[in-house]
Figure 1 (cartoon, rainbow, N blue to C red):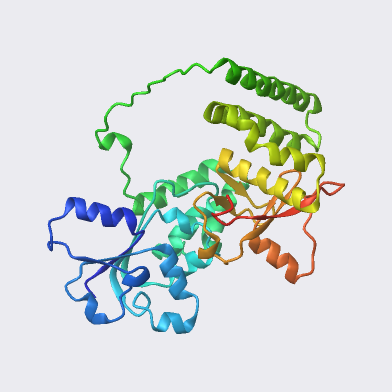
Figure 2 (cartoon, rainbow, N blue to C red; figure 1 turned 180 degrees about the horizontal axis):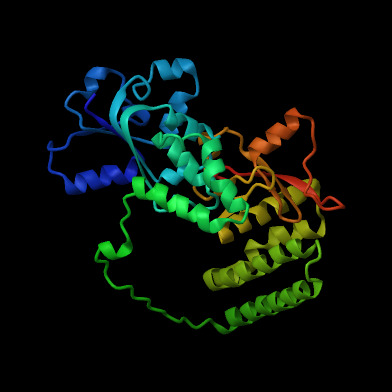
Length: 348
C-alpha cells in the first residue's frame, strides 16, 4: 500500500489544507464517523490521518483488529506526531501503535526524553531499532550505566545511538520573529485592594509557618495551603469582589468536614498540583502523568490514590494492589490519609 498513516489528526489536517494545492496530495481522515472501512477507499489516497485514541480503540480486541483498516493494512510509512504520548511502554496506547504494520516508521517529538531514559526506549521499540527495541538491552547498555553513576559513558553511547536515528531541527534553523513582552498594569479599586491585601497577609503568614515546620511530614500539606493562597491572590486579580463568593462553599465545608469533604479536599489539592506543576509521578511505578494524559487511551481506569503528604499512585498500581489484596501506603512510619481522586480530564 502506497499510503502513509499519520497519528495526530488536528494539526496535520489544518497544515495540509494550508500548504498543499487541492488534489495534489490527497488525504483522508480515519476518525469518528469518517472511519475507513474498505481497502478501495485507500486508492488515490496519499495520507491517512487518525488519532491515538482511534488506534488504541481499534487495537483493544482481536475482533476489532481484524475488522480495522488500521491493523489490516501494511502502510508505506507510519508517522507518530507528539510521539512522547507513548512514553509509557506498558500503556495500551503504546502497545497499539507498536502493533501497526508498516515498511518504515517515523516519530516526531520535541521532548524525546521528558523524565526518564525509558521514555526514549519506548520510541526505539516503536521504530524497531534492533537491538534497542528490547528494553533489557537498552537498560544494560545505557540506563544501568546512568544509574550506576557512569553518566559520561551513558551520554556518550546515547549520543552515538541518536546520531544514527535523529534528524534535529534547532530553533536557529527557523527565523522566528523577536519575542516582545508587554506588561499592562491595572490599578485595583480600593475595596479590591483591601481584599487582595487580606489574602496577601494570610499567604505571608502561611509561608512563615511552613518555613518554621522545616522538613516535617506535615510540611507537604502546608505547602499546598501556600499554593492555594497564591492562587487565591491571582483569583482576586481575576474575579475582584466575586472571589469570596467562590469560596463560601469551601469555607462552610471546612467548618463541618465530612468524608465527602475530605475527598473533595484531596481532589482540590491534586488539581492544584497538576495545574501548577503540570505533571506528577507515581510513587510505585514511576509513571509520569501530565496534562495531556487521557486514561481512556490507556487502561481506562480513572481513579488514582493521593495521600495527604502529596504521594500519588496511578490507577494501574491501584488496580494491581487491589488484585493482590495489598494496601497502598505513603511510606511514612505513621501512614498519612489516602484518598481516591479522579484523573479524568473532566475532573482536572
